[in-house]
Length: 161
Image 1 (cartoon, helix red, strand yellow):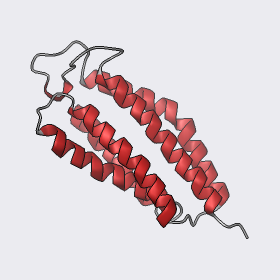
Image 2 (cartoon, rainbow, N blue to C red):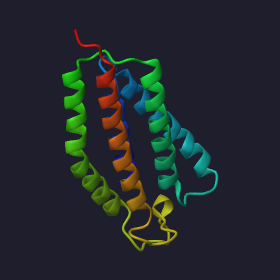
Image 3 (tube, rainbow, N blue to C red):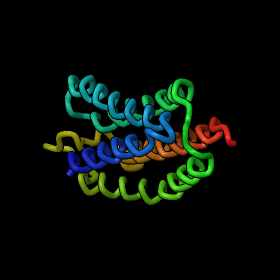
């Protein structure tokens, strides 16, 4: 189940990056940076065992998403209309609460709380407010806010005729 969640998130990021490429290349840059550094975070984190890998990957991907978004705004100016970019940012923010709730429920289903023995990637080192799943969901909120902000800043870059 955890693999399915990761594949779904990867697909959404890659499709979102492809869709945004023509109008908001900074978003594409940010999403592809998040995917790339998520894989790098996995490679680095798995060397220390399976404990904490999902949280580490989410942290690497979120940091890269932020840095990629900022760099994308500098090197890849937006080409869409202000209105469509603002609308896209609004849609991201409107969908965010539902997306975060669904992610958290899927993670809790894939990795039930209080499972420690033979749990692989789902191991909870400690249980404070839901263990690592709450942290991953919080980072996902930050990611969605970053994407919406990059879209809004891209809208400001567009020169209206």
